[in-house]
Image (cartoon, rainbow, N blue to C red):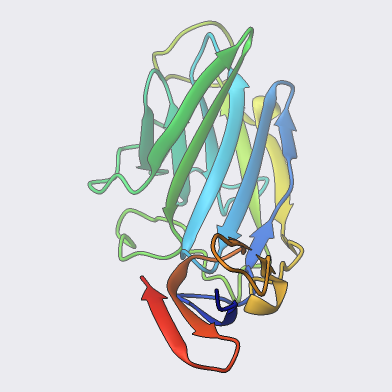
Amino acid sequence: MKKITLLLVLATSFGFAQAKSSGVVTLQPNMTAEFTLNNNTSTVTLVLTGPSDRWFGIGIGVSSGFGMSAGDVLVYTNVLTDRRFAGTGNPPMDTSQSWTVTSDNVNGAIRTVTMTRALTNTDTAGSDFQMPYSTTNSFSIVGVRAPSATITIGSHGGGASAGYATATFTTLGSEDFSLKSANLYPNPTKGLFTIDTKTELSEINIYSHVGQFVKQFR
């Protein structure tokens, strides 16, 4: 039987992962936020924790002393709502609900909500905070929550109960997704073979030991 040598593997995509993370930012006791910006998918993922027995919210792009007259806000009652600051009353909901909840879990007194959104969108009227990957290095955030157990949005008790912080981004470690990192074995082979790779393969071409094309897999 002739030996078969794998000489060429073509991949659909390869390159370097591009992502930035704020790490876990503490806003208040039992309240944290972690943003991850992904340049490959053009999305931002927010993991937000808060008390499981009451509403809580996060303001994005606002700093200490802001007058509640402008800004982007997310509020969790029994569902997540995308809102905007417009005075001292309840923040009105945006016409477009830009965030999608991917998980919502409760562990004792803590609720963890994971959500995602496009880095940038056209919802400027709703004051969605834009996060272009190349220029977003930090932004200010604030976390608030109800002073007692309730899912009805109301006063959070003023500035003393607002936890301000800055989300500062660092680039996550780049991982090599090129074919140089692929592992193919056994090679040469008379039959079955295995390819370990970090990227999706679109095409595998098999050649004999003398360079003759044998078969293509797609």
